[in-house]
Length: 256
Image: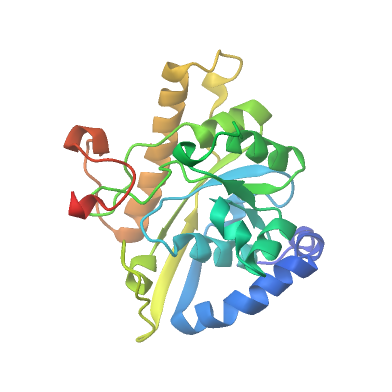
């Protein structure tokens, strides 16, 4: 991966003390566990705001995406579980690095809007990571399932690029729903960044559920194509929808 003067300037400006502290705590262990192969990093904007939308199939893949973003010089902001912000030290680091606390709707009466927070991050010219599936995929073979509207709504509301992404290999480090990390042998994780999703056909339209569903399916198609490239396989033709299988989007689908 080439390093341009523009990228070097961006790295200097975004790798703040807090992010360097997080990297100091996380990168050594993640580097021992796996090596990371980054594909098509040129598709990530060198500066300015964008929404990054990856697939979601392991509880550790947000950390994997964070490693990938660090390597290309953009510092990601995530929407993280609100309870993590109450953990000593970790909570402080999350707050100082601009991560967004999110409570489940069933647990919050505050009316807080995580998408509003994501839009505020975008308006500051930063990178915000929004997982369109919202939770670990329920698809049996870990292909992307149907998406929710947050990522495309954030991109359309703010007029910033929507970058699809896919990773593969994190499931070898931490299998879906597992709590046990596999350290040896060392794994290989691939991360690929796609071209911005063309949302021009939806710009200026009233963002009702139909428009958002069409835009989200376009995003999920792009993510799936990237994952097909990494896996060297073809995804199912029909997008997996947990509701069609009597599954909740909360909890472990393999126990239902």
